[in-house]
Amino acid sequence: MSNIILEIDNVQKSFGGLRALKDLNLQVEEGKVHAIIGPNGAGKSTMLNVCIGRLAPDSGVVTFNGENVLGKEPHEINQAGISRVFQTPEIFPDLSLLQNVMIPAFAKREGAFKFNMFGNVCNEKAVLEEASHILHDIGLNEQEHDHAGSLSRGDKRRLELAMCLIQHPKLLLLDEPTAGMARHDTNRTIELLKKIKERGMTKVIIEHDMHVVFSVADHISVLAQGTIIASGTPDEIRGNPKVQEAYLGGAHL
Image (tube, rainbow, N blue to C red; front, side, top):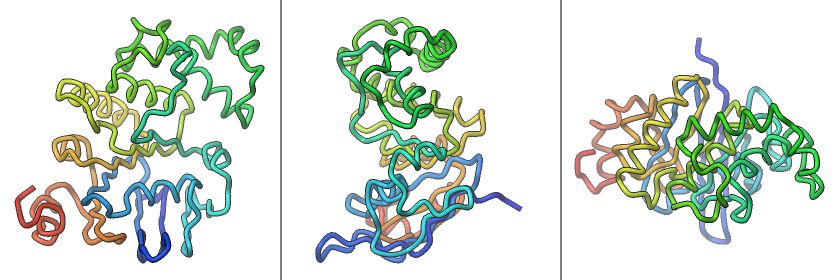
């Protein structure tokens, strides 16, 4: 029997008169790559913000590893094992790539960012070595001493992914990880996601690029008007006329 690591049960969220999430139900199986697709305004980013504690739903339950995480602070959810890569990279532009990757490791260990952290960080050989190894894995090791602000958009997205990986999350949430990338950067990101997939880490990916989705996803759910309208394997979703109508106006995926 499959192990469900994340379950969203009847979640509702409104902003004034706008219903962003309506009776949202979703199950994510441990060790799988679960893609969420849907048109703009479907509620995808709102769903992720609820999962990480940035938004409180009006009702419903979000269970991670058997525990309801609603009401917990974002740093508590992160400590429990959920990390997120945002649409706009959240990095420290004036610090080096190495420093950017090292900070989350200490933040997770100590529970919060500390302004005096770097006196300890620089003496932590094991964290330094792991950060350097992760940057090598994602192809940024030659720039590890450069300021993060000097990176291209695609490389900033990969750096933020490295900042998540060093936290060893049980669940990684990626919000449009290839948005705005040139095709060669997108292809490099696909290969990186495949490499991470081989390690068995559970991932939820929101993505508009169907080439990315069908390259990496084990399971796909389609979100439209705040609710899941279809869920299945890539082949099942590709041939679903209801999905084609909702997502591409009847065109084939």
